Image (cartoon, rainbow, N blue to C red):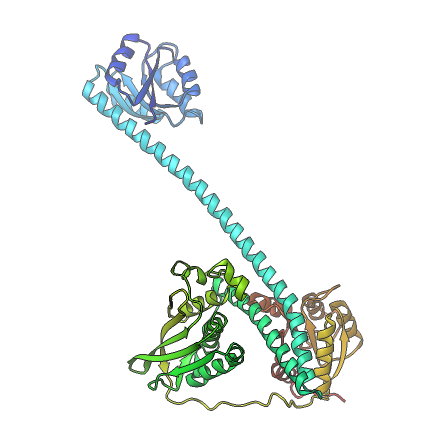
Length: 532
């Protein structure tokens, strides 16, 4: 235990000896002097906690000594106890307390009172020092927290910027590949070429799926992922997932089985997109790690309450299985069961992490039962509201779009493949289009010509799309400040879309874009527009 320094100041040595004898104990150091000036020096040099000071002394009395101590920041916190033989009149006590003393001891000293008072002040000092220590630790901890928060926010910004940039850089060429494949499919091709085109589409979709997985995981971690429940045809959803993965299963001579409980309701309220994503990941994973045998999707109705049903989804395979010690590891981001898994089977290690997080967001828990070499069963349970009647689906014709010959469109796009793609699409819709390669060319072109709408890429050299929009909205081309502008962006984070709208864009279309979506937006923002 740290010792407490106590200073005794008295002009009579015998009084000091008497006090030292009364206060002698292991947890304190007693420093004494008969000279007030030396007392000031000792107080300055040593960490004095308590001062027992005589009131009547030659040269400088106790009141004057304490006034000097209290006026100095280094010694102002010393607890002063006056020791006096003078009258106990109130005026002396008031003067001492006003000077800064905390108590009085009167001569002749009572051993028990003196010891008790000093003991209580020693404990007070210890408590105060412990409190100061804790406060300093707290202040240091708060500084660390503020710094950690700053680093976390900076890291989050860097991560989001990186994701936005990578999303754009990866999605832009994929958009071109998918678009060119779409155009090729309309041309005269041999059966073999159609098969190659189908493989190209599968590969593109697979790569796009990895990018979407990374973005979905980031949204989940940021708490920006939303579950949207709509009326869902459950048997159709299950058949659709199995059919999509049947080609991969046939290539490996696997039986892909669907087992639906006869008690299942046909329609439920569910986030069909996310449920589809969960099942696609689990079944795709099962097919990947199964060399022979089968993969089974089983859906069971295990409980009914009123208008709700508790469903259990199981994906059962006869694959390689998972060692018990690795069953938790497989749910971690970018992790797989062991190093050989990536070598032998490939993959990013994102699928199961996303499934676990999506299942949790939907209110369920993903469970796994497995034995190494004997297959694996993934399952999750959740309550769903039963829908009595499903609203009829409105089917849209995505192959034939109404021509828009009355529109003149300015396109700003620097990627040559995307440029070729968008021009071909607009040409098919009989739209008159001018094309530029950056934002600066776009605003200069707008100044010279009239357009009904602008399709603006977000990321371009010289001047990016957002800066170009700000120039347009700011009056760079007088009289054309309100022209509708739709931005193309492969960055699909929520804040990227928000930034585009705040810059002045009317809408945002993600890459790769859906033709029906683009056609609808062109029609909506140029509603009733005709050009002479």
